[in-house]
Length: 279
Image (tube, rainbow, N blue to C red; front, side, top):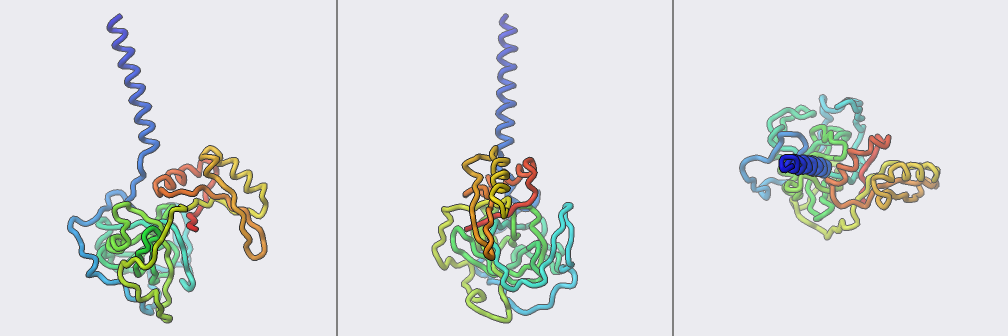
């Protein structure tokens, strides 16, 4: 009887441990680095001595501007022009794993330089990147392709990420605004990494998973996504070019890791297209 009780207790303990591991695995934090094995350099860098990239007119790269290209089975299309380009979303960074390697433009990646990677902008493009959580902003030269994590809009060099204060977290909510070198303005002369305004991002951000002209279609998608949390899946109404659109959004969210977890589950509901929306 004693041996049986010990066996039963051991069995219960093993089952409990298995359940615990499953829960931990389901809730574990997604790797914040852009690629497995990537990391920061082993020495500290005084980024105050590294200036912003200086926008200048340059010819398009011969290597980095195909009409389209494919990575991991997904096709991306390169923009003809960056004029007027503004985008908000999640930024990441890349470091030692790619340092010294050739970028998509043909230049060598230098994690200590003020550069970045983007999936669609023509190479090169100069952009002003603003951290929406603290107001810090920088100017970088986009000379590479990426990031190919489905939930990121720009990959910053290690130094650029330090200046925006996103290295520790690994990611951050940003605004990316293209700069026209032929029309210099205030965006071209910002102080390196300087906070210029108070930014409050307490309202969070959303994952937009659909936009419909008919309310019934939006309602159907909202109900389908109910298991993600009915309080999280919402329908918002907007007017574009005189037409009413019903947008299905998940949020508001304030944690990028939670957003990554939700995005990883969208395919289970037949949702293959989404974008991050920052109000």
